[in-house]
Image 1 (cartoon, helix red, strand yellow):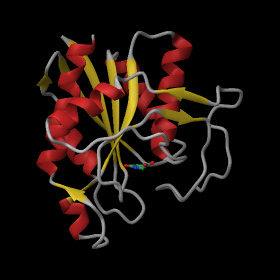
Image 2 (image 1 turned 90 degrees about the vertical axis):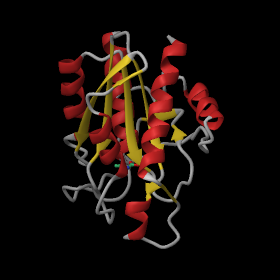
Image 3 (image 1 turned 60 degrees about the vertical axis):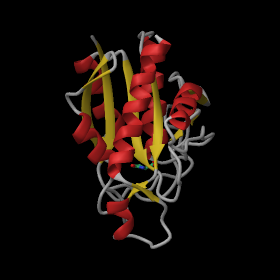
Length: 204
Ligand code: PCA
């Protein structure tokens, strides 16, 4: 049995709940396709998130890492193509606001996802879930953990696929947020994640 580390994030900014956290709680411990899922929550803090993720990686020794995060305003599931070596943006949960910082001094400008992102999009669409590849994970925590996980795997030459998938808001979040926020049901978000994990069996 292979192990899949599935991470989600705590609530952040003006989002009182994070659907990525709800998905991870639900899928933790499940066997999906060829994988047992180890679900973990990450804080939304530049000084903490990637360190915690790397500790989890060392503990779990996964074959695949999929990180989930909320992209409020997007209406499709968006596997990210690339993470860039930059922290910049709004404040994190500790109040820290990065500006034009390198994530890793002397690190490469970017890392491509090693997840089968085209397969993810294709199978999601086959199952009726709107999906498209995103070419920017932004410069906030989602990009940060994607970059740092891929860097750690690359430097240590681990045999592990890793990448990031942004998800839309859940209905639960949308009803307490802006009225114009596109949203999916929690059940569909969970099912879409299962579909992506199942498709990994075909890849390996
Ligand atoms: N989304 C944010 C960080 C936490 C989350 O769920 C992002 O897109 O960077």
